Length: 168
Image (tube, rainbow, N blue to C red; front, side, top):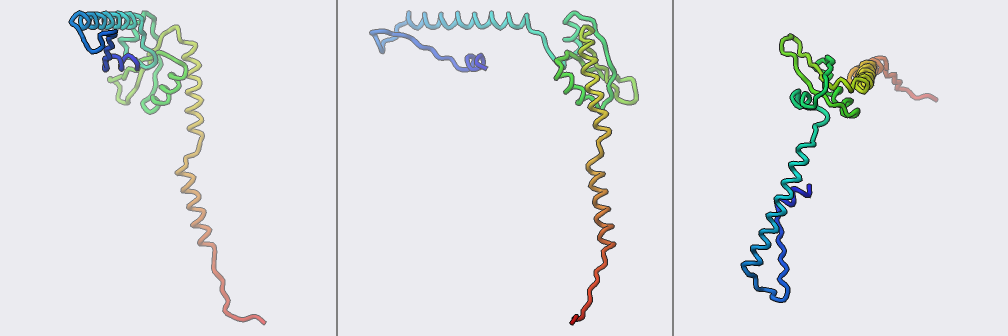
């Protein structure tokens, strides 16, 4: 973030000493030269960072193949992709999603590095546990509907009995 601020705002401080208000051409030239050196140094740092950068998490197949490792894959259905991405992010797995266009139903293949197989199996195990818990959990709408039926049934059973007489 600081780099972005440095790129957008340029502050040039010139120490003029005793002269104070007088800015000479040589002073301005020296200040511009210093600023140019600073820009070149920043560019060199950015290039060095770009060489060592490796993407993490969800990425394209091209980026995953560039990392020179064997790939393994697992098939995931359409409605489970988001849940799987959350678990994969938790385990810091580098993966790529590829849609199978030939099948009628949307199927996705999750490609990951073969060396991450142990981590992937742990993540997939947690993912399957989550999905099984979601399936076991009853629907809130269904619960509301059942309670609504009970209440309406209870109201029908109630019969108001009023007697208009005085007891002595």
